[in-house]
Length: 281
Length: 281
Image 1 (cartoon, rainbow over the protein chains, first blue to last red):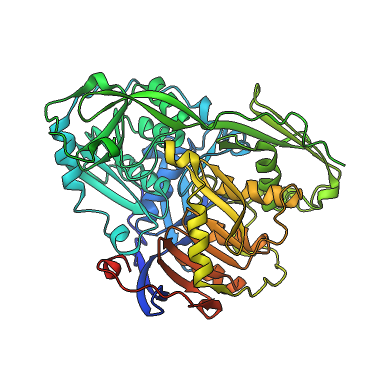
Image 2: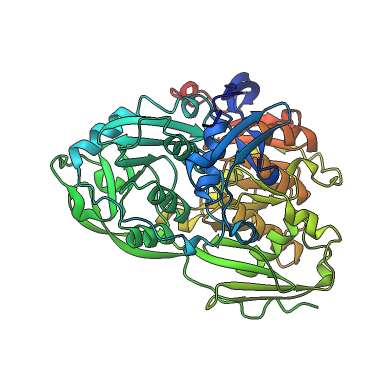
């Protein structure tokens, strides 16, 4: 048993500052919090994450897990976050044998928010095959509509990214952070700790770009469909091909682009063309 | 003398792939290249950067410089990039005495693109005071208009960020990369290598968010005005206050928000209100 529920302190995700607008008027503007959290694994300093601080325990566990620095959940003994000293202490019974080697190699990825993968990205450990989930266009549209109710912080402060674990059109869990990688790591952490009912999530949504690291992390979560509001990079496409991820980019309103795995997309809700669709496509 | 001009190979920033749109139609879509480049400093592996590859030599030098891992430009002996093996070899006559200590501490920031600062962010070495540049609103507007001619890759492929070194409304240098931190490091590298006529740049523009790392890097370049098309985070504001940066966020069209140092902004071109200004403000 682990006591990660201890010390679970929620902090405000935004704060208000006064700014001057183009009319020379002062106005109140909400901005995203950005807090430093230094992660210690069995007393060893691993990294300092900059985060909104929404769910630091899940973030830290998900980060270490995604970096391959934590093995089995049952080995986890404690996660304690102390904002006074901006530190998270993680205690585990077992460390990976190649810890030193992993910590020695850093890949700074195009992560919006985080962007460091210990060990080489393209030496990612073999993944169990991903489910070849089929997604209907109508389900995608309902999911995008449902997601509209989330990303509170973004609406008030901007400068954050959101990620969601979904089962078809249902949003199971949603997290925002100053970086999309903090958000995906937090979801991974919750899933791994079995805190969220997200075991059977089959679609992952992110507001951020589909770069190599994002595709890798979602594949590591065992999810076969990845949907983004943003665009895609070359390595993101390569990894989607390699892992067999149905990759959908620029999904907003009724618009999207199936980048890879389009064969698993069932076009049951093709919209009627409106002026501007071409421009947006 | 250094021979960084050697092996300077330009690679295409985008490539075309076929995607399926919401109408079930295949279409060609340009996507941003994303290449791995492992950086070796005097034969020691430092990091692997994911980059568009537009100007790898300047990127690598600027990255190492911004991490405090390179001292004086005159000590730099060679930078050689070999895309075949995805490696950049940097040779310098002098390494920082606290190299080990710096490499031992990693801060994963909210960097969009990069996001690792060796050594602790908030222990940044004391900076020489920044020039208290005054900026006129009319100059800001002309600069934003001038910037419209840049970010080629973004217009065709999205998923990249752009940064510019400017002297008042003149754009001296502009770089795009998959991450805004690669872009700022590339500009820093060019400036440091005195390859760009950017010594008297007084304004830095970025399409990306004003997070802690961005403000720190621009302050390190000795530039006192930082303008972004995007929002700002708490630590970005804190560092702007600490370094005395005139910080302008959400600058697009005629709209902007002066976040810090508004006293140095001369409001000589206040726009006439149009419907929607409130919503945008």
